[in-house]
Amino acid sequence: MYLVQAWTAEAGAGAWPAALSDPVTAAALRALHADPAAPWTAARLAAEAGVSRATLARRFTALVGRPPMAYLTWWRLTLAATRLRATDAPLAAVARETGYGSPYALSHAFSREFGTTPGRYRGQRAS
Picture 1 (cartoon, helix red, strand yellow):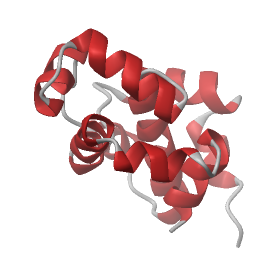
Picture 2 (cartoon, rainbow, N blue to C red):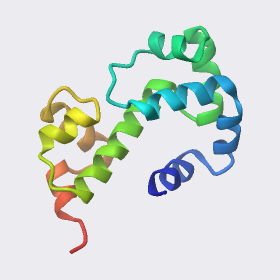
Picture 3 (cartoon, one colour):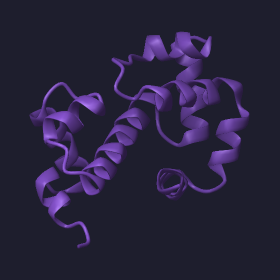
Picture 4 (cartoon, helix red, strand yellow):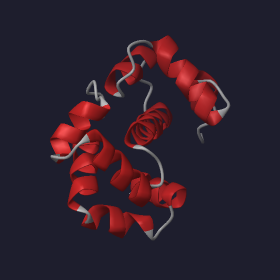
């Protein structure tokens, strides 16, 4: 439930139904959510949705509010943040589960998105 709330807050509440009612965008979202750690590329995601990269980029961006690969980055980091707060899993495991090749890569992306390191973020969880 938290993840849906986070997405609707980020994308705007009206975007969710429109994105899911579009077959191309919905197929791409299903694929990304089913396996966020997969080595996604724009071409692979477009093939999954059954359209060209340009068509996917145009429709996805219009309905979701950001391009597909930017959405994937946001989604992976949202999942990582949730995992960091909910578990004591090592950063390497969280990185692997969310599609980052190393803890350093996750830490760099995480700090850029949230303005803090994964360790500090984890330490802020409620006791």
